[in-house]
Length: 216
Image 1 (spheres, rainbow, N blue to C red):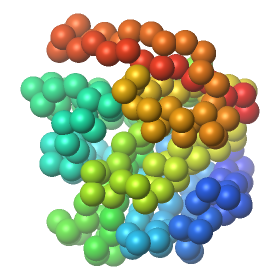
Image 2 (tube, one colour):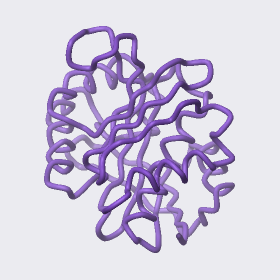
Image 3 (spheres, rainbow, N blue to C red):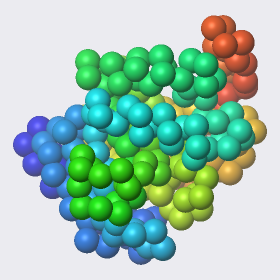
């Protein structure tokens, strides 16, 4: 994957949706499981996006428990209940390590280093499921950082990673109640293909999901 980070950097810097929010973008790493992105984000400050590592587990748990309200969790049912949270995050991390999925955490940097302080916090989480077969993004932003284009940054990172992996189609799903996301994905070029029922029997979770796809 020679030149992976340089190609991703070029694609993001030229993106009309985020270029007015992103300053001093730097990307390192030559594959999607070893990427680090830093930028100064408008109205937020310095953010750092890193591939999911083991030491992120508890910070990600805190993000889910304390940074998302009930409605946000319902619209992003990655870890459907607090009772199954640790198990869900562990399985999520395992899929990243085994390279079935590509997973990132976005941090608000209050200190220079992620590993030497307790002040930095996860403000967003996003991923590309089943990248090798039917790549499907997922993302969520902490409640107090929403409506600041971070979700737009996350989705374009995932779209461009999918392109750089030579995939021809990317899929996305959104809850039927999440009208804002549905309209946004359509604006980006995703086409609505069907509505299906999502069921997670172990936690008695059901919802109607809109499925969309984009040719790359």
